[in-house]
Amino acid sequence: GYVFAGYEARLVGHNIFLDGSTFEASPGVDRNVLVGDFFVGAAAQFWVGQVSFTYQQRGREYETQETPQKIGSIGLSLNF
Image (cartoon, rainbow, N blue to C red; front, top):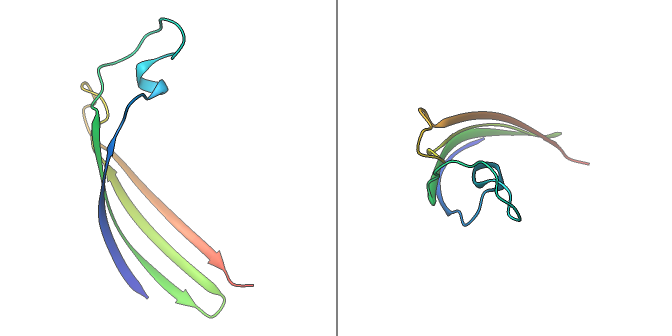
């Protein structure tokens, strides 16, 4: 088994979900151009495959966002 951690930063040029339509006027919000993600997790390997858990916290993507997103994920991979 092993543990892992990391940080990722992204520059966002256009996010259609926050900026609205690319081709016509539509509602949007004031967003942050630089967004960071922090993640930490653990994995265990077995003879049949691997199971892992990752916790990720994403920085605020728009100005009025009150709290950052918190995401947990479980991964399962099988050897064949």
